[in-house]
Each structure stands twice: as C-alpha cells, then as structure tokens.
Length: 369
Image 1 (cartoon, rainbow, N blue to C red):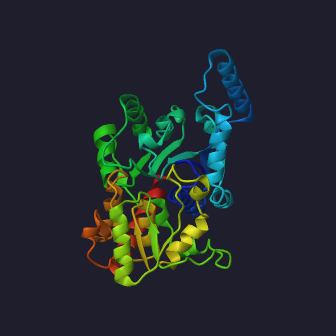
Image 2: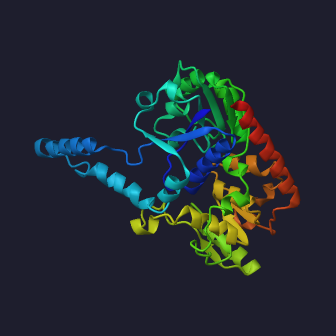
C-alpha cells in the first residue's frame, strides 16, 4: 500500500525527527511504500524571493515602509538551514520525503492509498499554521483511507478556535481509525469531535534499543563527555538545583546533547543542534537522565536508563502520565527539586509492560491499515 504521512516540520527537533523515522520504519517492515509529506524546508521559491523583495523595495521608496528587511525570506530560510545543518543529514539519509507548498494543489488522490496523521503535537493549534491539513481537509471527497496514529493535542484541553473546531468535527468522523498519544486526547476526541479514539504508544517506542543503536557508527560518533545526561528545554533555577543534587548524590558528571536552540537571545552559532546520532549516543552512554522533554523521557525508557522527568505544565503534563502510568513509572515525574527522593530505575515490570503496550500499538496500526 502507498502511504503518505503528515506530521510536524522535520527540521531540528530530535523527537519530531525520530518519531517520523520510527513510523516510516515500522510501516516499511509491514511491506508498505511510505513517504512523509514535508512542507518546503526552505519556505520560498526563487520567484518569491525576487517578487517579495522587489515589493518591499517599492514600498520603502513610495511609502517609507521599513517593517522588515528587504531580503526577509532569505533571512528566514538561512536561519532554518543554520540551526538544522547537523540534523538535516539524518533526515535526508533515513526519511523518505516529498516536499509540498500547498497540499490541495500538490497532492492528488491517485498518488496514495492511505494518509496517516501523526505522531507528535499535530493537533495543537499553536504549533501548526494550517490545522486543516492535519485533519486531512484537502482529501475531502477522496476514496482513500484516513488514519491518525498517536496524534497529540499536547495539552489536556482543546485549544482550537471555532473555525478549526468546525473543520475537525467535519473531517475526523471520516477517518477510518483515530488513535492518540495521551489518554486526555481520547476524551477530547469524544467530547469535542464526536469520535472514538484509542490510546497508543508514540512511534519511537515501537522500535527497540537495538534498532537505534544500529544507526550509530560508534567509531564516528564521539563518546559523551559525562554520565548524567541533562536534556532540559526550559532551564530554571530549581531545575539546576535538581541537576546539582543528582550529580552530587550519585557522583555523576553532567553533560548535554543539545544546543540552546530555543533560546532566541543566544548567538546563532550556539543554537545549532548537534547531529541526531550524537543525541542518541547520549542515551546509550548515560548512567542517569534528567529531562523536561517528552521524547527524552521516551528514549530514557527505550535505553532502560534511570531517569527523572521535571514536569512542565506549559508544555503539557498529560503526555508524560499517559506514557508512564501504564509502565509503572509515574514516580519518575517531579515538579520541583524537593519532590525528588529516590533513584528511579527501569524495572523488569516496566519492561514487561512496555512490550505489552508495544505489541498492542503495532497491532492497532496493522489493523487500521
């Protein structure tokens, strides 16, 4: 079967890249032909560069407008290229993509047998400029399969406006199968959109530790410079206190596997993300992990490492508990340094629970297709 995946931009977010890699890998192993529909990495064509720049020149001359640089589009694209210079090679090597500008014009019903939306926060409006696409509105009237796999709202309440809610209520009942990444998403699907959804694992968890290690050429990926992996997206003084406490309690050396990519006040050179392989190597080398990231939590589990998740309510807590409770790992979540009280280990019970959830989720995906 020919399958097209819609997900978040593939740029320099490790979790976003790896969940798409994992979903493509699982589907290929099932025997399907798979491609991810990815918005143009560089958002503008040369015609748009020239046309928009000339328009800005004219407005400056005639009206004195100086709201944006003349080469604004080039500036935006160069910014994306720079931050992702080390992550794009992984995407190009392992993920089959087809670029598009406008799905309603660039994709035809004869090209694919099925569309899969997911995973990641595809149904979180503030993270998507065109939410209609994520409800597959461009396929309305087509005779194809529509599937949502581990789609996420990010938080435990629907944040869409009336217009996009109307689109979702029209399109989601046309899906052949709807699954979400959080238990709260099941409630949102039912109460807001009137559809029944299943809770399944994030695609990254459908692969094993060995699958990810096989991506690492250890002679080319340097060993991590420490044994306490710190993957924090939003630093606070309390999080630094927790890092210091764990490092001191267990005589560990903290190290990072990410840049200051989300710190817009930092120099651009300090925001360039390390390669995906180096990020994965960090989980392999770590003896303990502290994070506030969902996918770093996921990879701590995959690599069977002790970890602490510092709960981040602004980014969404539901996704952590939806993952950790079935695996008997909810004690790994803290919301302050004072909450931390013991060494959190990945037990054999958790491993058994993970394998059970993995089989259930793969079976759901198989049956949906």
